[in-house]
Length: 358
Ligand code: KG4
Ligand code: ZN
Image 1 (cartoon, rainbow, N blue to C red):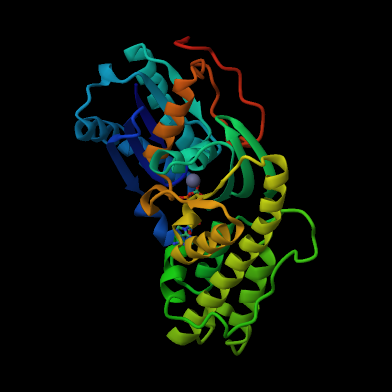
Image 2 (spheres, rainbow, N blue to C red; image 1 turned 120 degrees about the vertical axis):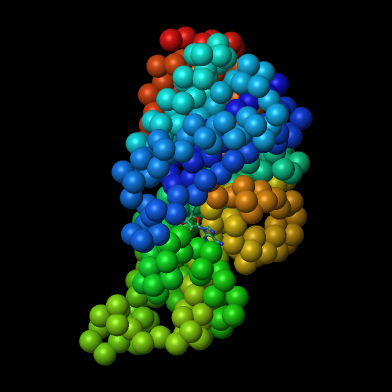
């Protein structure tokens, strides 16, 4: 079986073709650089860029894969959650192909794309414990199967990636902030600044990053004369030390809450043996190392998608589409793209195997 996947929910226009032998036949990702000037993704600019590039990306993906459109078995697209202008463009492209080729359409939850990506590249079996950390989401989940998620914890304010981006913005490091923070943290002293560890006294697995962000703001403010952080006088060493201290605090917080989640996972799924991390923040090598240590200590096996499949890409959507296609989980062509779409919500009505319905 061969599935095409399309991703357009944020600032990447991407597509990929995978087969059921877990081979990536072709893939193409275009990261929109237009947003750098604004320090964050501007939805209308993103939508226009998706519109400009989607056809070329699809053509290039088929070319790289050496597959003719008629030879694919299903067309999947990220149908939410995300910036709706972009989501609609990817979904429309997928539905048009589905109709023209008479192949089934699959509406993939973007978060399910992140959640299942590790199963394409590593031997991870259900059920597994997942830390999903991206720019818009931060959750700890048990993944029991395709479309079967139990959410153990979620952020009560900012997502982890959002916190990296906001701290980077305060330090004027550009967007996206995560990669720059990681780079500077590498040469910084993680013990120089004392930052809070959030929610230490709560028994649940929820997360919080806004206190950390405020604590960083206060440190930066202490380097100003008039309290205006745009005029903070920070040396490169100060900036690197702030990045390292923030990265450590954010990672410690994730590990602390994951320990609670592992306890819960063991009770609910004694047969489970994998800890997986995914989403853009999972590209962070420091976090990956700490998670590996945690998994080793807890007797779990640790997996993460290769770094290029952590940030948004078409491969993860094609693969989630494949997992759905193998179970005959197709969608009607009247499926409405969803700006919000909780992962642990009951699956939307499926059309059944082979169902291409206009
Ligand atoms: O999954 P993703 O590409 O898009 C969303 O679905 O949100 O994640 C993007 C997020 C951004 O917030 C970015 O700063 C963060 O992932 N990120 C990182 C790193 N690379 C990307 N955060 C920390 N360290 C990194 N190396
Ligand atoms: Zn994402």
